[in-house]
Length: 262
Image (tube, rainbow, N blue to C red; front, side):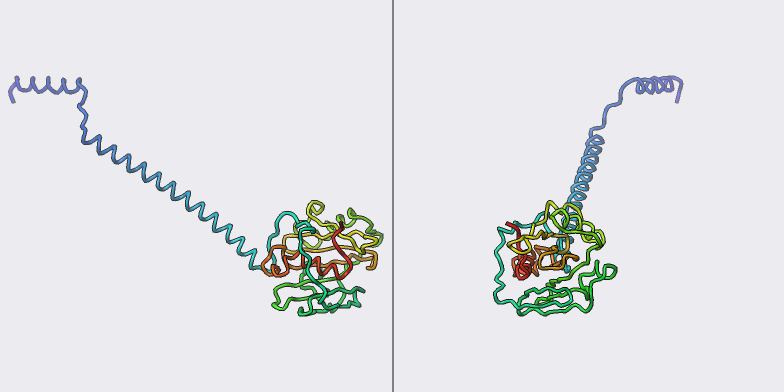
């Protein structure tokens, strides 16, 4: 290359540096397509993640519902069914059972199995045991529903004279027995009358795993709290033939001269 060619080459190089580069449309289009595909992939990934999260939540919820339905006890709704809306079970053909241990008489469906108590109730051994040998128990023909009756001795000096007295006692009892929920009893309980004429106070209380009734005095031991429990939640499938756990419990209570207060 001679001197003139070298000078011309230098001038062209300098001119290229001062002028803006002409964009390559093919490169731009390829880059745009790449970015578009990248954004689409991100959007699809987010959508898939969201769907997976929703499905997982649904499966988790169904799993909880299913476990509640197949376990011996399940989760109740937040409040009891008004007793006036419940169809009463016919107890006219029921058999009577006499408990000399607790000095009480209770009726039960004639085809149910009686499981007599083998000893008296003891708080340390029995407060958390639905299958306690201290219960006078009655079991359905299929063995999937159990109803128990027993008496808990009151602490010396304890007097049960009002609904408030029973509520306070039940809250303490729930804490000792780990039954849940042990609070808000006043809001979900059904008031009971022991003996129609005198109407000694009692309560029917739905819990997470069962429905129980509590009463004291009148024709029953005033130095003890008599408890009747259906060891199923009110909506459990096993108690559906009886209209639910609450109607079943009320039917047992009616044979003991205990009914919802009017």
